[in-house]
Image 1 (cartoon, rainbow, N blue to C red):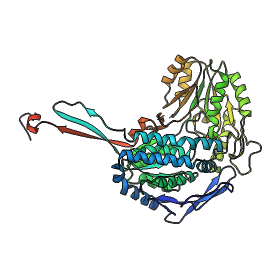
Image 2: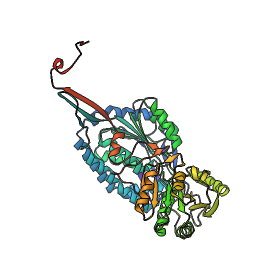
Image 3: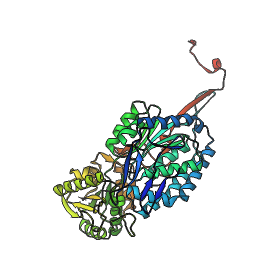
Length: 501
């Protein structure tokens, strides 16, 4: 089977789940719609998997887990490289599916899909280089560790970057000898199904990679709670992440969580304001603000706040919001009616808490039925207000003024989140000193976020646990086995204090 995608009509026919190397409907026969956020119209009907479908997928992954673990690492690497080549070959179709399903404008979706082979190649290269260590111990003994895969791993993927986030967790899991069961977000299942098609074409054994589509409260919860799942990777909201962690705890699964954020973009008084404005706009408008690391708290030094805001307004006037497939679009729609309603509700909250500086409505000329919202900026924001503290997940920024670095650090760290921060200025010593004081998992200086397979990514506090990407991600997909060998006769090598029992 191939996913029948008509790019002109914006329709997908015969979407099915991928279990044990084959295509299948949900066992109960149920389906649900996935919608084009540019127009609000249905793209496809997707299988609504449930716990029985999860059982089938986990059973397939478990059946082949030992065989895959002991497949030569070089062979696993070769399959990942073959998959990278398939992604490149089908990049245009994958990008169009991603843009259609998630609301990325097409050029951005093409850029994201074009980068995905980097993750597959990186972990293919690591597959035969990851190992344990030898340990110096007393006596004539050899002590060493072996890194082994967890076994069956669950990958619960969000809707904002569906394919990239699927690959960033499945690539290391597969490279290190785990088998995978993926539950894509119900709003954005299509690129995962196309990717599964490419996994099969690349030659992976049946059962090594599986995709169960469905709702989070049904298929997602069943997957996280499954006793044969040894590792869970979840990216999404903090509240859902807490539930996933509880479900995994019942059977002591290893859980990696990348959760919410309320990231600061900090403008120092010596910053190049044109550069700072560009970083700020990228920070809170990229993918219409639907990014965990979105820089939606703009901490601007009081000395430059007036000039910064003037430049920010001018830059936002140039931002083209519209249908993701239209020429020149720079910002597409929100992913769903639910997200559209959520973001607009926070804009109304902001109007009661602060001063609306820019935006706050629907962009002119956008398609009827689409989930479009203007970039929106509030000034005079109190750090304790809801728009400054709660994750909105839309293009809504709060401007907070600061004067001293102690005041700045106190305000930035006054958050339940700790995922990311951007610092903009010229005094590197000052920037680095501030970076060390921030309670976040990642800091970018004079740049906007660029996720890469070789650099670790994750959060502090309620922004998550564990790390994706980089060599640090190895810990999330392996377990340590200690082996000790006594090289002397037992009685000669051991001091039993005269009492062997």
